[in-house]
Image 1 (tube, helix red, strand yellow):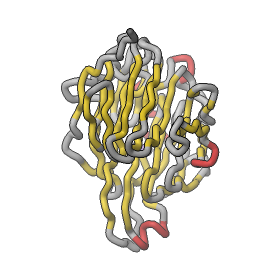
Image 2 (cartoon, protein in one colour):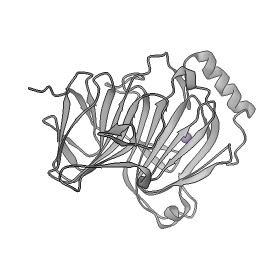
Image 3 (tube, rainbow, N blue to C red):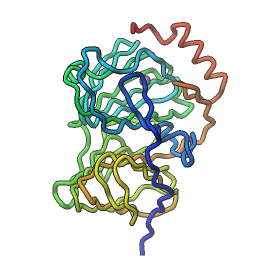
Image 4 (tube, helix red, strand yellow):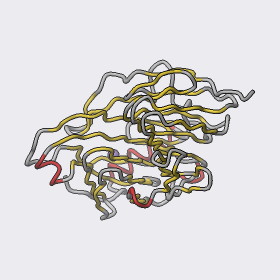
Length: 292
Ligand code: MN
């Protein structure tokens, strides 16, 4: 008999709040009853923008210039498009189904907005922003971007011939994801047609959670519906998933970074001295200049 990995909690979406005027997010972690700053390490923060219909706007909604340092922001656009600009001179558009993997590392300034044409027409918007912590050895790495279009992602077809696993980072049965990461992790979208079934295995030591983006599924005999986060215990066992409706499930699974965390606002460091330094650097213009 094979063991099944234990579900510790199915977490309902916390009340949403606005980030700027463009992102209405449910902050699943850190915080709340289940997930402190280390429980999902290397994943530090999960902001989920559940589906919302935006009305047309001439002025793109979003969040103005702000710094980040010491970690990576991973933005996944499920519906709608996001534009970004930063103090290194880079800019780009995250299209529907695409991912932007930004390494803030030693620090930068950026701004994030609804993309201009999306803003003008308005429409359905659904996104995830994930903060991935960096091991101390890489906190000061130079800022960089990985623009990961949907086409670039590894696609592992499942036995029904239409359901598949989209690999953003890591690997599933030999299908690799394009993201380069600073610690071992798996970031996938499992895209199942109603009735599809798949059994997966992730290392017990990897902190693991599923965000149900779309539809619903029975996961190890428990029903989980859209906008819920399934947190697994770190026990050895398989995870069996049966879609009870067409489903999209974001899988987060990674090896914990067992190092101290000192986090304040947009900075995730190892010590308070580093946080104070980062605040000073941001204020002194060390991260560069970016117009609002
Ligand atoms: Mn940001």
